[in-house]
Image 1 (cartoon, rainbow, N blue to C red):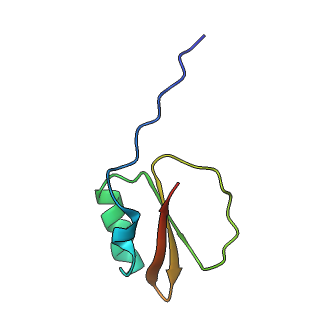
Image 2 (cartoon, rainbow, N blue to C red):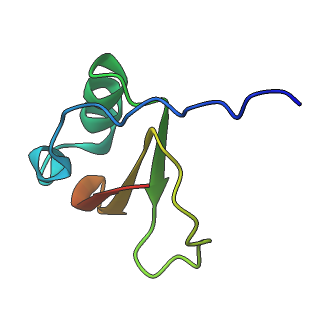
Image 3 (tube, rainbow, N blue to C red):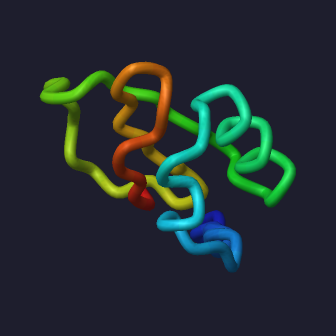
Length: 71
């Protein structure tokens, strides 16, 4: 049987640091800091709730990050 892979850890980065930034700048900065996936969502978007290591989510209002969370 093959070993179960160990997922890498999330970057040591606070999602709160992205709130208030323009979405393009926030996405670029998040990728530089090691986030594998960056997801920009409109307010009230229906999304799946599974946790994905290495993913950072942005709720975007008017081109600006209003909320940010891991997974």
